[in-house]
Amino acid sequence: MWENNDIKEILITREQIEKRSVELGKQITEDYRALGRTPLLVALLRGSVPFLSELMKNIDLDIQYDFMDVKSYVGTQSQGDIKILKDLDDSIKGKDILIIEDIVDTGNTLNTVCKTMYLKGATSVKIATLLDKPSRRTNNVKADYIGFEVPNVFVVGYGMDFDQRYRCLPYIGVLKEECYK
Image (cartoon, rainbow, N blue to C red; front, side, top):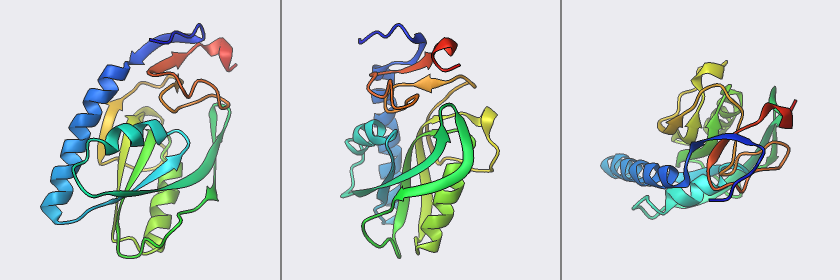
């Protein structure tokens, strides 16, 4: 396992993420199969890409996926102002959307993205997130599929970053405070 001296502790290992992704993929498959539908996975760039990659291997449906790039953070703080930097490539009118997110923190980004999906004509919108941090929630957003609940610590790795660093760590770690203060 790749070690990094800036990591205070490892919260979730690669093996735990892989195991949980199998479980979530099975649940998503069962839920959508029961509805007779197939979701369009919409991954929010960049942090969700490793989770999307792991999760979609475990969904036994003929899924498609697309990407949105939205910005709400500068450093460690959510700015509350959501900017869409890259929108979806195709129409989602009449489609079931499953948003793939790395972490649900304040809920501001997902609140805006969910509203946007419905304005674009989506039939349904659900959320699958690798991490959930309910202690920071300022918006009443709830994920439908949650990998792990985490405490109010600054996490990096497996797609999550601090100023574009640490994304490629193969685990979820707590970043030492001196690295971002």
